[in-house]
Amino acid sequence: MDQHLTEIVQDLIRLESEAPPGREAGTGEYIYDFLKEAGLKPHRQYCTPDRFNVTAELGRGDEGSLSFLYCGHMDVVPAGETSAWTTPPYEPNIREGRLYGRGACDMKGSLACALYAAKQLASRSDQFSGRLQLFFDVDEEHRNIGLWRFLKDNPSADFVIVGEPTDMEIALGHRGVMAFEITFTGKSAHAARPGEGNNAIYAAGSFIARIQKLQEEMDAAWKSGSTDIRLPSSAVQVTVIKGGTKVNMIPQECTTELDCRLGMGETQESMEEKIRQILEQVSEESGCGYSFRRLTSCPAGWCSPDGSEIAAIEEILMEYRGRQPVPGVFGASCEAGLLQKYLNAPAVILGPGSIRQAHVTDEYITLSQLEEGAYLYTRIFEKLMNAKVQKRSE
Image (tube, helix red, strand yellow):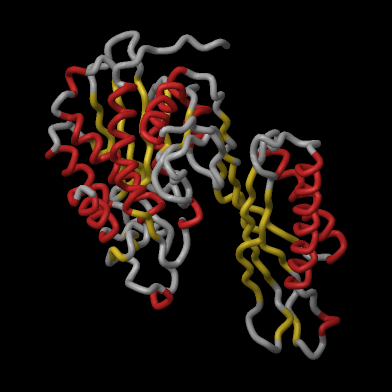
């Protein structure tokens, strides 16, 4: 195990970069300095006065040669109750072949592997006919402001690798994601005189019960094969609820937040319409009003397995493991769908670590996955920077 690689991951974990609120600047400066010391010319792409993406390029970028993008996010989800962690979340700890810390898996392990690979190849940058674009963005875990800022400059690429954790297996697609905030408004009253009020929490409860039923219906449709099964079933989950002021007051307001995942064939519009129909029913029956706000959204992504870039990656994985790779799907959502949509380029998800370890207490990545990720990224980047652009059918 290369000690330099583990040091990079540990350095990144120590730089707390939770979003929200959005404290990626330290991580961004570290990546900027690392790439500069490696001999590249990194660039800070500001989204707000104190939040910025980092970009850099390797290779000559000759006409007709492949230009491809590696995308990795610098932010992490909040660590939550730190006392629940075996060791502090931002003090990386290695034990029993695992490196623990918030972001170890999602996705500072991947960032470290990409940085390691870039450093290995930087001295030979002018020898590669193609171009590797490195893109490290902010706010992936919240509102994607880093990606939207990147897209504002109309970037181009022929192929995309999103480095989310897939155990270094090729993932061809992922479900889309949407999040909503819904506030029910009733009428406050003394709890001893409930008939004079209208309980907003009861309206929210009715809404939640119908959301559960909607989930059951979507699961049944997916299992029956009546919807596209290339990706898992669409999902809608109530994940936050806040209501009430005092124990002896009928609550006037209750706010819920929904996390929605969009399977193949499920559009942002169709999911929103399903939720609005339920809201109208609940409002009519309860007499409570409601407000509805979309917090974020990213489309689903799906990439054909037939491209020459994927074949090149499969060849490297086959040589390394001695078995034929079987492309799958990514278990969560990510920015591949947006990149594929706006760059009009195939996007795969490929990175070290297991998605099962993302967003959990005592998050970790195995040292073997780090070693594998660094080696395979180096080989893949090297091979694709010498590839030609594939002509794609319309």
